[in-house]
Structure formats: C-alpha cells, structure tokens
Image 1 (spheres, rainbow, N blue to C red):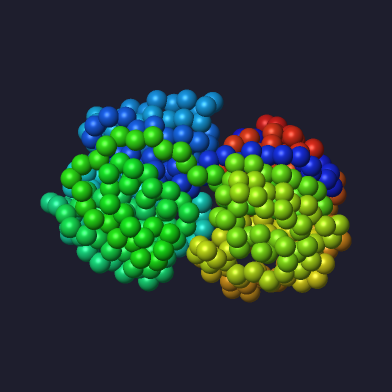
Image 2: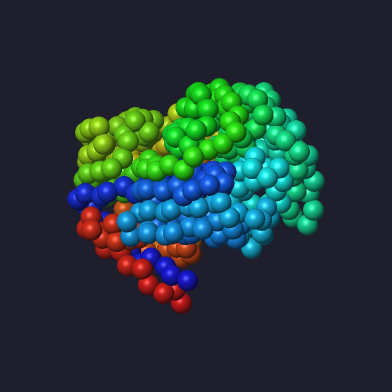
Length: 421
C-alpha cells in the first residue's frame, strides 16, 4: 500500500483540468448493459480504480469493453452479456456496482447481485432500490449475502421515495427504460449525474422526462440504439481543488468544469472570504490570508454535497472563529474528525453536528484515510499544516481522484507518493 508524504504551508498556484465525473460515468456504464446490439462510446472517462471495478463487473457479465483511458475513452458492446450474477468479490469493492441490478432486471427479467461494499458510511441500505422494483412487479429474496430478483416483465408504476436517493433514482431509471408503460419517481434525486444518465439514455432512444427535478417520468421503449456520449466534469474533484487552494491562501484556475454544479459550494467559499471569478466552463479562486468561520448543512442536491463535507471541515480547522457543520445525508461521516485532531484541530462532535474552532495553524502528523472524501479532506488539511504529514491508505483516495498528487505538485505542493512501511 502507498502513502502520501506532504510538507505543508506551500501556497498553491496554477491551473488544473478537471476530469470526468466518477459518479456520472459509473451509472452510465451500468446503463450501457441495456443495449443488446452495437457499441456505445463513452468519452471524458476518468482513469480511476472505481471505473476499473465497474468494467470488471461488466466484463464478468459478458460485455466487451475496449479501454483507451489515455484518451479518456471506453467503448462498450453489451450484446454478448450472458450472465445475470454480479459476484461478491467484485461488488464488495464498490457500492456503485449495485447499479447493475436495474439494467439486468430491465433486459433479462432476473438478476443476482451481491449486497454492496465500498466506503463505510453507516447505514446505506438498498431497501429503496428494492421497494421501487417491487412496485414495478419484481420479487426479491436474500440469500447468502445476495439480492436475487425476478420479474416476468417490469411494468410502470409510481414510486415514492421517503427521501432522495442518488443511486436508487439511477437504478430505477435504468430498470424502467425497457419496462412496459410509464414509471414516475416522486422525490427523485436532482443531481447533475442523474441528468447526465438520463441524457445518455435519451440519446439511445429512451423516453425520460424531468431529470434534474424531484419528479422523473420514464416511458418504456422496446429498443435502444448505440450512441456516443461525453461525461460531465467531476464537481467533487473541482470542489476539492478549490478547498486546497483556499486552505493554503493560494490561487487556482479550474478548467473543463460546470460552475453551476457547484453553486452552494461557491456560496460557502465566498462566505469564508475566498475570491471567486466564474466563467462558463472555468473558475478562478484565490484564498484569503485567513479564512472566516462558517455554518453549513449537507443536503441532497442542490444542497451542499456531503462528498465535500470533509474538505470543508479541514478549512474550518484553520478558519478564524467557530464553524458549525451538520451532516444529514450519511451516518458516521465524521470519521476524519479524530484524524484532523491528530493535526491539532479542535473539533467537538454531538450526534450529526460538529463544532470546529479554528486554530492559527495545524501541525504535521501521521493520519489515515477511511474513505474517498475523508482522505481528500486529510490531504487538504495536510497542505495547510506546518511540517511533515503522512496520509496512510491512499487507495481510498485513488478511488475518486486520478493521480491527485501529480496535479497538486503541478500547483506547487510538496507531496509524494511512496510505498508504506
């Protein structure tokens, strides 16, 4: 296993091109399993461990995937898919693998998918996925850690989610594309990645309306056609580099991104004193000499993204005053707080709320990443800290960021990837 060695207190400065969105390409890849003819081409694909895992799952099912990751391109031919079992040894690596349930049920009427793994973020049940498909006529049983679903034919239904579920919305959409009749999802997730999935499927011939709103309607079609599609930029990678610049009183220009996807994030950064210049597909940010304290609540899109909460907490640790962060999306998503404490942060946690009193400076220490975004938050904190820090278990970070250390080095950070002891 590798680790990052970081010598902090270096002002970042320069330009970064943002990669394609991990959380958009994974459901798009899963949805490509619906097509029983031809080859679809997906562009702007990030070269990430999670993308490789999804490709492994698809190849196990019988799809042919031509990989040209230096050019950020995948070509998928799912005409040869002949299996409907997604095994534990693959699905355990990444929760998003569960997204193959919808395409398999929609195309074949049956699926056996291992209960998912991935980041440890408290209860992340798949019951909403199963509830939705049950409304459409599927029957499920659990056996040996697998969800086994069957449906003679999926039929349109009205599905009410108690709260927006990102992957649940995507799974139901893909399952409903070839279903009989009309499916309506009430309280659907509004995320840009859901919109990108709908755009991909609509290009193929699907009939999806309302993506990006809380009510999505899918009218089933009989066939789909191969397409070419470019994945949207990764708003979470962009947000991470914005916080890295803010935490070092640095300057960064981000290219190949959609600033509108970061609306709430930009509002909070501006409240902290970060100077922002927003263009159509680019963004410039300059951090102040000392950040201001802030209050923040994570919430499904268009609220503040939970996947940038750890990075913002890292900024709060060196801000002037006491900041308050409430986490409403996932349980157990403050696992980075004790690690930030090792760097000298002053954080008090009560249930789903954290109070962070900023210090003049953090001090380097050895810390451990527990998930993708917690790891990114620790990188941001180490960049702002005095002296040497080591971040262990960076394989978590690699799941969501392609060679983040190289991009940060290009901005002037003193960061190296070395083999852990």
